[in-house]
Image (cartoon, rainbow, N blue to C red; front, side):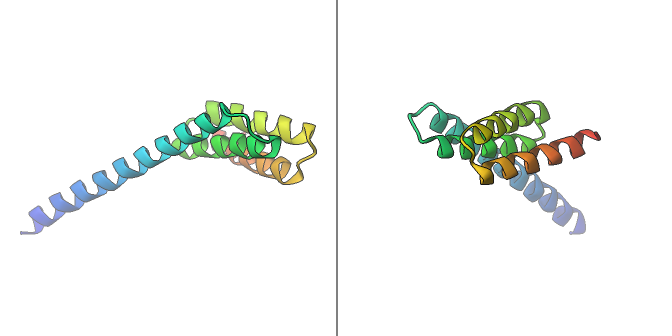
Length: 100
């Protein structure tokens, strides 16, 4: 009986991990579609920052760094202080993950 319970527990955990992974990919896809639209610069800076954060959570640190830097660059250009802070926060987390 306990072996069956362990097996169901493993299946449940794998299902949850799969659903989380799919949700992250949907979030990334939605943000990338948003960037293709004609949107306000602050919205674009937020989307770039959110993409950086989403890729970081996914473990794709290369893309995370690219998008966080793009968000930082745009936020700096338009003097969007909240976006600058968010970009630096994401970059700090990325560098921490990389062990820098």
